Image 1 (cartoon, rainbow over the protein chains, first blue to last red):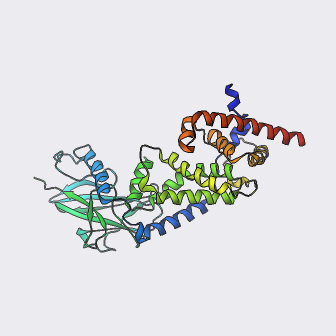
Image 2 (image 1 turned 90 degrees about the vertical axis):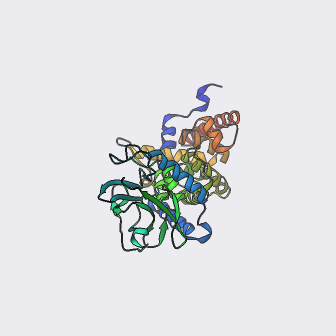
Image 3 (image 1 turned 180 degrees about the vertical axis):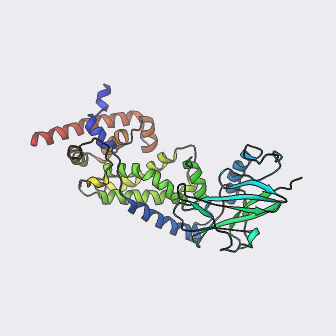
Amino acid sequence: MHESDYDLPEPLRRELRREVDFGPSVRARVMRAVRLEAAAPTRRGWLSPLVATALAAGLVMGVVGSQLAPSGWPAGAGLALHRDSVLTVAIRDTLALVRFSLIAPRAARVELVGDFNAWRTGATRLERNAQSGEWAAQIALAPGRHRYAFVVDDTQWVADPTAPAALAPNGRPASRVVVPNQD
Amino acid sequence: MPLSDAALVHQVRGGNTEAFGLLVDRHSARLSRYALHLLGNRADAEEAVQEALVRAFRSLARYEEREQFGAWLLRILVNRCRTLASRRRDFEPLEAASLVWHPGEDPVEALSVREELGHALSQLSPEHREAIALRFGEDLSFAQMATVTGAGIPALKMRVRRACDRLRALLEESRARV
């Protein structure tokens, strides 16, 4: 068979390749459906905690002692740093400033709850970067282990999928960050 | 730098449902194009794309990262289109506003080619339409087509060749009638 047996004239190929945009209606319907799926109790926890921990641990280990660690920070000291979601940015006295972030471009509000604010909504709101869809906040934390989670639009409880897994006091999935002692 | 598909999948698996919206934004144009070629009208194409994306969300735990996320999505859509093609309505031209135009293009001429193509595609068998849309619309290699369709490469080469022959013949018939 000749190669041209498999070919079509260019005007036809151009139309076959032309992009199609159905507008926002499909996206809106899909997101409405997946939010309902996610909110249904039977759909919760469809990734096993073991897998979630393994994924998060792999990512965290990849950056311990890397260029993301603050200068003077002991490499490999068990600091739970993360490229995207939790990054310790500075140390002031005995506290460390930790940056928490979540990609949620369609959210109207994102809050951080954790051991450090008694898991109260309304205590720590994240600020939105309109361009990237990232929500972020910096919190001063004492050395030790802190559990946390995000609350999106007052209704959706979200553990940080890129950090080590933990359990919130209410039994829901959470994440943890470890701020080491400075010695 | 934008997050990779794999990173967004991690976010969704961890409970961040909104991150799935970014995957929808990233892949829906390609999925829409394929569904439109297969089903011939906007209503069915929208339905197929929507169902494929929701099924992908439900099946995300089974997605394995060694496969490209876009190819995995396309495989789900191909199956949905096969189901919907059995109750497919006739070809209906798409309004120009739903097509992406490039500078310097003549929309009148392009719409004419597109309508002619759409009518011809609607007369092909679903199998031949699928071969044309994957090979020329999605620009897949025969190996990639084999992954998406489950058919062997020799069979796909034959299918594409016969689909091209049939499509050319249909277009010539259509032009001869004008």
